[in-house]
Amino acid sequence: MQTQSALFDEIAKMMTEAAGAADGVRREAETVVRSQLQRLIADMDFVAREEFEAVRDMARIAREENEALKERIVALEKQANGVS
Image 1 (cartoon, rainbow, N blue to C red):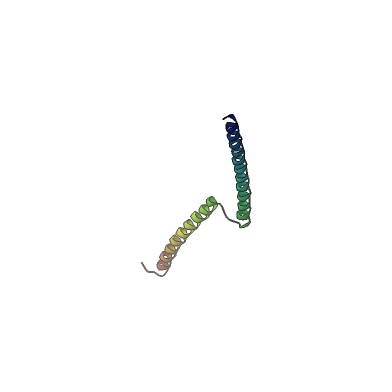
Image 2 (cartoon, rainbow, N blue to C red):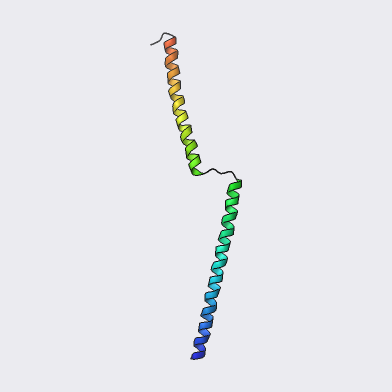
């Protein structure tokens, strides 16, 4: 009985070490993939979400101002032409 227990203990120890090694390889692979993806994204000139939203808001405000200015121009042209 002692020899079987020692054999099972050795097998369990080897499996635990193998699982630890596999986990280390997995973490290393994740690190490599993450770094490659970050480099790829940096090379593609993506913008941060905050920057995109800021520019989108600026464009929306500019469109609203353009509409207001168009209405003002129409009103001033009517006034200049003597139309009420």
